[in-house]
Length: 361
Image (cartoon, rainbow, N blue to C red; front, side, top):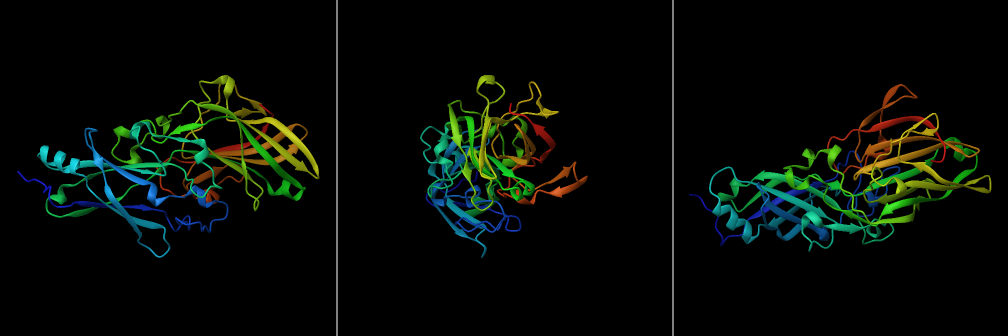
């Protein structure tokens, strides 16, 4: 029987990468994309933790002495290395047979882990792009055969893909409205959760982040509050906010709604509860068509025109990744270039929406 020496250190390496062709993002505050902000990609390397699990779900410790360094000149890819804990070696030797598969779970920007990985939560206050020590919690997992460690003191398990634990909502004006001296003064989200879970549903039962069932990964933490203000991008005039997952299906009396205040040629005009997260038909809310706010998605609303008490909007629900989408207006496929927010996730495609005339709902 081959055993792993308990007297020798054993290390694993892995990569957490940003696609330089898509984002030009780094782990510092420089960012070259047209509309994104550094917070969308921010990782605090000192707040990165890797937990090791056996295939059967047994927890066998945390990587120790975790270090990191850039592996390309653009600083869009970083290599991490950490020492396997004694519990791992004990489990490895106590379970003979090959291959030896273990899962490596990465937790980034997650802070306190004392509750155990499954129950790690974070505060809405952490989703503050203006705070230097804030970042979106992220999670990812990869299963690897570590049999090579029988003959070597280290191995590289490759890239581990991460998934954000929060969603992003954006409201922006069309160029036509901007030309008509219209601005968004402010926006407020009526209901939101003050707390969110880091791990999605199903996280402990999969071998790779890519295997997560995107249709069934929702895991809301019920801790409701009201009136969350949006942040404003002074360069583009758009407003945005990051939020934890929210259940709009089971709480009909406390659904997410966005209120907006505009300045139209010097006059302020407010639209209370102007936007709901649902489907519309003929400008009317479709009954029982609300949907949940799901992690790692962007919900974008573009205000095309303002007519009396009505807003004409185009809205898109997108995975936080770059894909093509079908434009009904232009009758062609388009690249969703303005949202190439490239922590790679799973295959979740864009879900484009038609132009809609919405009444406050």
